[in-house]
Length: 110
Image 1 (cartoon, rainbow, N blue to C red):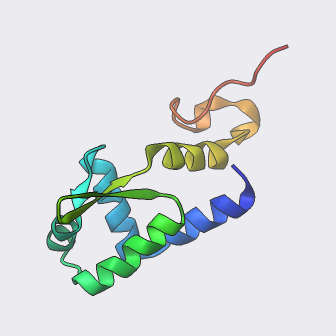
Image 2 (cartoon, rainbow, N blue to C red):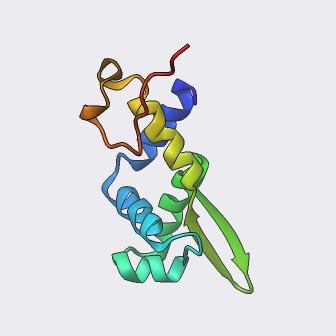
């Protein structure tokens, strides 16, 4: 991941409603949620929700798919994991005790 992508993704989730939306979609798993369900769960008006979903989508953190007349949104787990890996790359001078095992790996030997 490059710095420009990381900044765009961090900027997209650096807003309360978008962070709530992204976390909800992460919890929903790969099937995702319909826009109406997101709106209802988080009590966000549809017009406002559309704006936030567009921002998250442009940052590459979520994906949308149409099924019948509904649009379902889901978290892009590869993008999320890429951002986490970028943030924890070379963390703590290679001492993995400072971050979760799933995000840090010991330095490569050889």
